[in-house]
Image 1 (cartoon, helix red, strand yellow):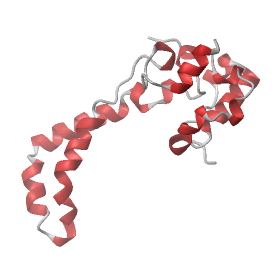
Image 2 (cartoon, helix red, strand yellow):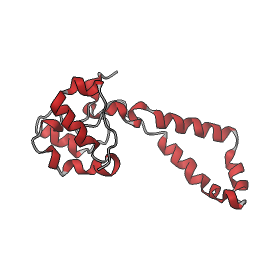
Image 3 (cartoon, rainbow, N blue to C red):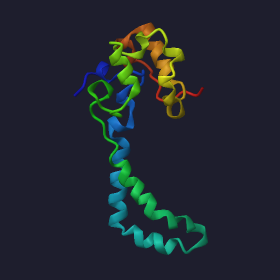
Image 4 (cartoon, rainbow, N blue to C red):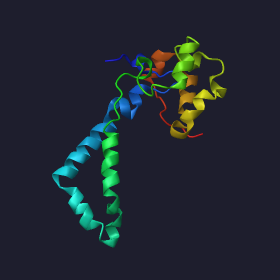
Amino acid sequence: MAKAQDLIGYCGLYCGDCPGHTGTVANLAAELRKELRRYRFDKMADALAKVSFFREFKNYGPCYSLLGTMMKMHCKKGCKGNGGPPQCKVRACALRKKLDGCCQCADFAACDTLKFLEPHHGVAHLKNLRKLKRQGPGVFVRGKRHWYAPQ
């Protein structure tokens, strides 16, 4: 098991808060698929799709497939253990600059490399990086962290 401080991503996000690391989404998707199979819900969805109130059940197949994809959301290594996206430009940049994290870079607040996080995390990574810079990793892992923060 990784130490808490080892789960601080270079970008400032905490891997321990990620649904891929916790396995929550993957486990729930697996449970739901199991229950859907138990009830043979594919047959029920076909019948329900013919009722105007339940016509969205025509999308049952793609929904079931999506749950299968969600079951693959596992990442136990964390960013610093080479988990997450293998082609992560943030990790590559930090390693190239020999940094433990982007908070050690003077340019992190205006960094274009970090901008890809904004659609999914808002400015959470920037808030976390400022906190890491100010308080250090020990306080960061014990305190409130951001996974999403609006712009």
